[in-house]
Amino acid sequence: MNNQTKKIKFQIPHAYVIIFLLLIFVSLMTYVIPAGSYERYEDPATGTELVEPGTYQQTEASPVSPLEIPTMVVDSMTNNAELIFSIIIISGALEIILGTGMFHAFCNKLSKVCAGGKEKFFIPLIMLVFTILGLTQSTDKFIGFAPIGVMLALTLGYDAIVGIAMVLLGVGISFSAGPLHATTAVAQEIAGLPLYSGMGFRIVTTVILYIVTVFYTVRYAMRIKQDPTKSYLHGVTGILEFDPKDAEVSLCKRHYAILAIFIVGIAVLMYGCKTWNWGMAETSVLFIWLGIICGLVYGTGPSKICKLFIKGANASTGAALVVGLGAAVSLVLTSAGIIDTVVMNLSNLLNYMPLILKAPAMFLVNIVINFFIPSGNGQAAVVMPIMAPMSDVIGISRQNAVYCFKLGDGLCNYILPHASALMGFLGVTGVPYDKWMKFMWKLFCIWLAVGIVLSMIATVMNY
Image (tube, rainbow, N blue to C red; front, side):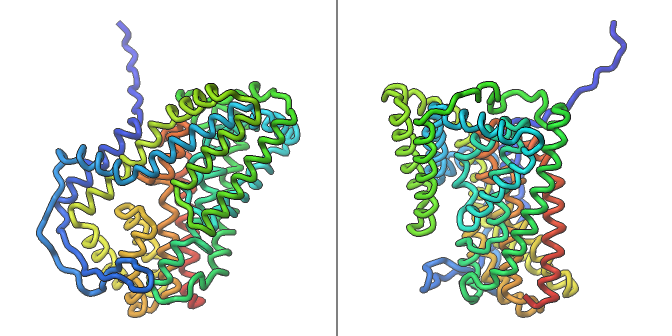
């Protein structure tokens, strides 16, 4: 008999299990938190439905039973069908492009160019590119880029977490600061401020978040470069595979043509999103065309193109469905009618804070609210009609209130287990949520500290 005591190692459950447990938790909350609502009206200028401050009243309780969760999940899948199918379609189209070997060939070239310690400069460069793209775009638009980021990271001797961070956090920091993002404009419109006013301080915030995030990511990347066993993904199976040895693909003229087509396609995507307000449906159409054109230019036959598309679509189905699953959390809270109660009570807490701490408290309150209302524009429509007039009373400028709202709305999207973009990135690449959080929790704490300090500075300078 072996007398040695074996340690039972706790394993974080699958992402679906985590979200189902979260759904059970919030459904039980609906029995505890009183239902209530504000009166709402439609803004004639924007057509947005806004909250009327001071009109909150309790309503009849309508808790959501845990037995209703499957129904909520199905309804959520239906409501988020466009995003779900977009992830599947984009992944299928990218598989066609990956099948040309274009990315493999250029990764091979990149690994040689970055040899001799130069690879650490690659992370700031790629993250800067996505930070610039994130000035006007949301993170869910870039889920299809997750496999590319992982390929580049693995080519340089890093892990998939670095690949995700370069893309997701690059877009995320500029999205969270929001110098040019549409959510900032919506919040400022509601607060009665000129659109995109106060941009300078938000750009400074973007730069600071970029520096902090790059330093943190490079430090982690260099550590696992020296010792791969220190990677949070060491020994983990099911991660998106890319053997750098497979990148020994010789560049040919067709690869240059495909790269040119891909770059033009991304440029069209950015222009369409900014100028024509493209959504996920239009993005999916563009990627279908990119996949077909790149495949044909490389000489891939129609049947092979279809097989590659199906392969990529199959691989992303689990990731796509987890987006709809996570969105069910918000649906449960909305159905129970407790969101306005949460917003009202959190807002009232600000009255008990000293002046210098009111803006940081507003920032932290918006982080909590973002758990209940993950949609940026939806959160703005509920929060800003309350926060804007309240800021007048508690001595905080409305510009600062919008600033705290946007930071709170953005920064926690990269830790929430029901955030669509995060779960999309993790699902497509196969990175477990718990492994991502091992990397992310310290950075998020740093972000919190930066947000608190900057919101205090904004108060002092009467931003």
